[in-house]
Image (cartoon, rainbow, N blue to C red; front, top):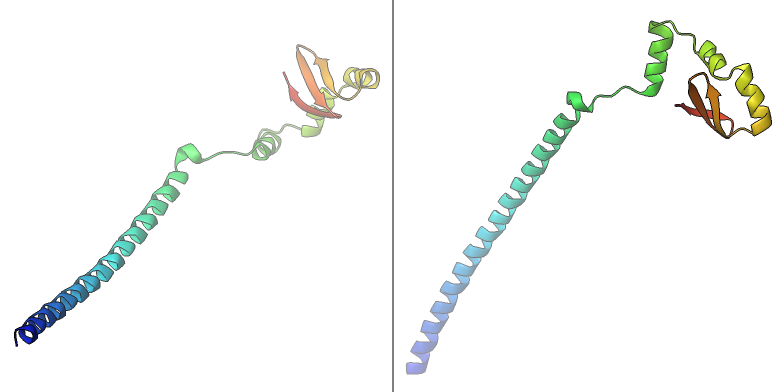
Length: 122
């Protein structure tokens, strides 16, 4: 009789623990969902902040193409005339003798060329 009573007590304790564990598990799943939702909200806000930062004045630029077109269309510079000034007869004569890469004089400045293309003026 003693063993049967002890067994019922243990079974009752087991049922209570299993019930408590189930409640804890359901709470844990709910907390996990809440956590994931918060993480998604954090990620979305970080993306919004990053997008706003990209749109700031410090991030705005002007391409070299736009600058050239500004000189050409707004300021009235003739780009072909400028090319002719850079690759004048003196420079073209030096290219025939010295090749199509290197430094070539242009008044007080120098033309830097690589493979037949002017890359900069210093």
